[in-house]
Amino acid sequence: MRLRWTWTIGRIAGITVSIHPSWFIVYVLFAWSATVMVPVVAPQLSRASGVLLGCIAALALFASVVAHEFAHALVARRLGIPIAGITLFLFGGVAMIVREPDSPRDELRVALAGPALSLVLAAAFAALATMADAVHWLWIFALNFFLAAANAMLALFNLLPAFPSDGGRVLRALLWHWRRSQAEATLWASYASLAVSGALVVGGIVLFVVAREPRGTWWILIGLFLAQAAAASGRQARVDVALERMPVRECMLTRLIPVTADTPVATFLGEVAGQPKAAYPVVEDGTLVGLADVRHTAGLPLPEWEHTAVGAIMTPLTKTVGLAGAASARDALVMLRERRLGELPVYEDGELVGVVTPESIYRTLRERRVH
Ligand SMILES: [Zn+2]
Image 1 (tube, rainbow, N blue to C red):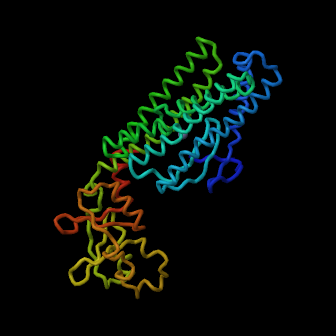
Image 2: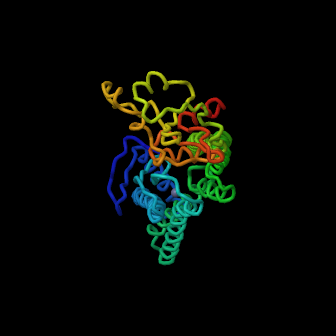
């Protein structure tokens, strides 16, 4: 998730911390709700010290949220996952992790680190509150009481099974472990998130309309935010599941038009290339040596077309990896991206049967109406 208009406030342990202006709404809301709760928790405190307490409690909550995100970020970094930074916004904090964890176990560790730290903080503030209460330090008691409650709420709210929140990630890690497919796990986790966010919205409406409780609007906002995030990850997961279930033999180019390695590029472009759904294996003395593609000629000046052989602009076979027809389209896309190639050969029983390209994969997906 990328937020615009953020303000960088500093770097801790090499990780940039920034604030989105919407976070100030949360600050004011929390300071205000702590202030109005002071007469309930510590009736002897004056109104002025109640307001001061609310402002300080909100600042300490800010530090708690940063600590929660740092727990995620530091565990991720230890597991070799780079961190783009931490941003605080309307619905709390987010540690921007550059890529997905490699295994369900790693995902579980990163996801649980934040809520675990919040629970430890909640217990520490509760212990401090108890000690302050014993010696009648009212102000200190009230402050620690709020922070204990806020950190416990932070942990619990984040553990709601709504992807991409921590609880949603925990759920995905468990499904991923069970189903052995990250794409399928993401899809099911996004369905669960839609159910949870729907329940939040309905609960918020009931709270607001029936109980006339203004906090209901907050539930509705969070529910809508989570629903939108779940729908986006669900869309991507549907595509990934389809790619995972589609063998390359169903989405490869099967019209193979061989060209000899000594064919001039001008002849290749003018007489051979450009046919629909075709691929061009390059042969030399009857054996396959590479794959030719119109895109390989980009950058070759026009006067050179006559004097350059296709063999000079092809992707040599030695640079590619052969795929079996049963390999999944998702694996093919990963390999194409990692090797920065435009096409990969597909073999069955040792014989070239097709060529798979990102375009051939996405075209087949579109034909099957997976969006
Ligand atoms: Zn978290």
